[in-house]
Image 1 (cartoon, helix red, strand yellow):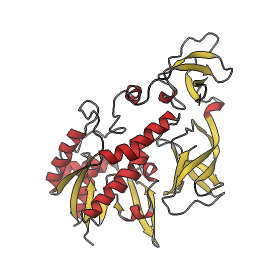
Image 2 (cartoon, one colour):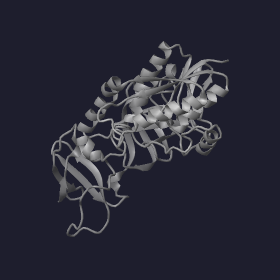
Image 3 (spheres, one colour):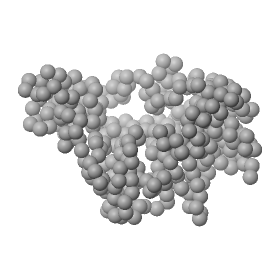
Image 4 (tube, one colour):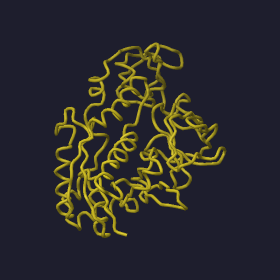
Length: 358
């Protein structure tokens, strides 16, 4: 049945092909470009001006109208403020997860409904299906591009109104469809990271909002001082680059990794070796739970989970689940499990949901 679908057009090839496929399927399609960041919006690091030009050019080829909406205020209040709070507390948040639940599938969805949309669509690599009145979030067909990890905080009402038209396609096929249709962005490079940081030096960006608080770097194994850090905010568990440690007397020539933070003492702890036991954890606790499936996993059933986006699924059991906290036990130790990141639980291809690693 033909519907009015409003597509979040980002200027990239994925959302453009999503709109094209919906138009070809007979739907009434409108494109919507979301502007989510205004501070220092310049061409060097944040490409929103060029993205809007690309979105307009694609919409013209597809033959759909394009509207522009500014969600910068909502983004700063709902996403960026939380981002800063988490870093200030010594954790490492994933703002893309919050952006999806608060902006792309909340502010955008609410706005689209006001415009008369039956559904919204995006270029995310994921899939949705309905079974007996329950909506399931599924992994994408292209496992190398699957983005269900970033969508686990959606709810049933949001899923019921959402389509992912490219979720059943491989990236190479998306680019082929775009090129054959004459879309000007068919070869456009995929965006990386989030607009307010983009390709800019991360530490330099964060220092504008969270002042530097230098302190000691100590070796976890013996508490020996081996260097100085610029501020615990700027480091994350498992980090190897940018530590400035080298030539420590009596230490082997093995790479150093961040293994922990003592916020009270302002100490950064490091260890040597990628497989150091301090970097390996077989259990974690998570809070701020969100079950996109509409129900919590059964305790002591074998599921799989990932604690970061670019990570293979790891066998696990979910334990001690209550309304806002659970524990997850892994069959094999996981590397650099990081507070503030998301742990996302799957049953085969179905994303059940997850929470923030505590």
